[in-house]
Image (cartoon, rainbow, N blue to C red; front, side):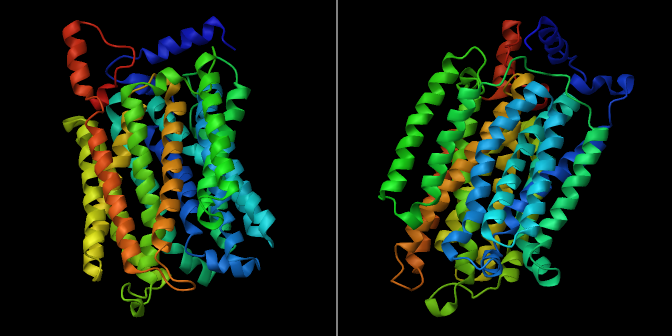
Length: 505
């Protein structure tokens, strides 16, 4: 597969003219319009993000429907998380190698099959299998970003990535809002029938209208690296996600974490020595990439924990000394400003990044997110106080995630876009798993046997989220400024191989 023609095609595409990049030849070769491509990608990514969040408010209903225990029903979330963590970086890499449209369509069909199984599930095993297949749908994220970079003019990439990131945030937020009404009006199975329909339609249209990638990475699948990557991810995430139930010091958790650490070391060694690595460690060592991954980890750590525990805080009855006794629907409505703010911020992030640099936009986003958590920490007695925090959180996370995605996509060679953005999304998922587990430990540690957590437990947890985002803000200042790199290259009279695209300069 590594024939000379493949390398030649990379060079001819990667060295696109500065005025229009890959998409400058749209009018000459009849490639699909950017608007249609974007709409199809948005449908696929929104379907996945909806499926991630829609089940959270209705877990008690799923538990009753499937006649299972509270501990077992959490596998509805865990199976999805583990599958997404394993699939996202691998699918991104496979897209770089074998064609992004092909993998995008395949992953959407797998996601739709998972929805079918979950909709028909009458017991937990089939539901878990369905949720795992839906988790494989996480691969649409790196594939979507990669297709955007291949098909859009360079000057439009940042804006398109920001818009796509904002729609992902809208999907996640909307899932919390619409789950209850769908369950009440149609039934639990329609939480899966509706996304299945969208997924099948999106896959069909994507197959017909999205051009196949002209940028490919020659090589073959590194099976040992894929197995080691899957192994350490499953061990670490399973150990962390079950630590609250099993105990952080339990032999099962410690054994899983130790096995994960050993396989992580083995994976790095295999990738470093491989002539055809699954994930190029040289790419992962780029300052723009590793700092973006660190920030993504901290953002994931805080936002997953916030989405898990702010609703719980609001649903706590006031008789506990805090909380509002809110219903699921009331919580969803309260979070709508956060969703709207995140959408607006994502749309603006690309344009602002071209003017002020993506690094500065990430800094602003992490600062706003830290401020939001600080507000929740010190002021959570009135609805309007939380409303202010939710708006700040929406602007902060929407800006951060859109700008981070642009930093990663524009900091690596075109033929490694899928692998790089897949690992960034995956590291955010790892952070989210760890953050949720740590937050659960902190909050529940203050609860008396059989009772509700105290307000102090939540306050301590929100304070930790604030500290984590302050750390993320500091990390942004280590991230290289692409404008300075461009100026240095101009002075030197030569561009670096991994220079950012003009959209980020």
